[in-house]
Length: 289
View 1: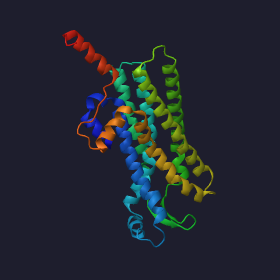
View 2: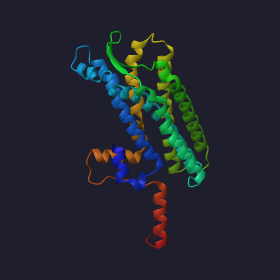
View 3: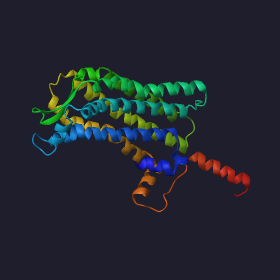
View 4: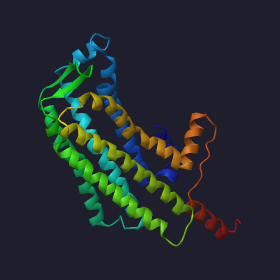
């Protein structure tokens, strides 16, 4: 949420497509964390006769139960798509492709529309079939179960996650090699390296989600209790590591966030190199220096 605050107050510095994509990524992750908390965390501590039992009994076999099940798959699609789009964004910036032409704008519009609509189409079936919340004696937790089987739910999702994870890893690996082999090294290049490494780590961590998804489907529920124990932590890692990486790799954002948390009267904003160069050139031309 601090990133949204910074974008609204320092939009001229951070108002780029990269940071707006990161802001959208954060919103998706927050929804994922909330959904996972209800479906995986609370279900472990509710117990068979706890205070939260009434909540799960209330949403059992209701439309709300279907929405929770649908979101668990839909948000996974969006998380992997956003990381891929961020990787493509770095390609456009580094190779200075013209983004103002009509063919480029049309292709990006079609891809963006498909990125939003296709996952909804693939997960819409969860809203058309009943969903239930039942207590599992084996794992001692409440499970959200839909009539769409686990294999059917992951039929496209597993391969989708694999393809987009590999593409993101390959794109960021090539970009990292390209920028490191460039002859000129400056501050802007160092910033780009940080952004690429950030996205590379993010795509690498997402591979854990791919691995556990394949394990859940092809292990035929032989180790269901083990997966139920590790799945909430993997989900949290996939959803929360982006904020930690962004805080570590971006010096300016880190200072802005710390300034907002400590309630400083005036947050220090360090302008990017091209802003500083343009201002120095203007001052020289106008005779102020």
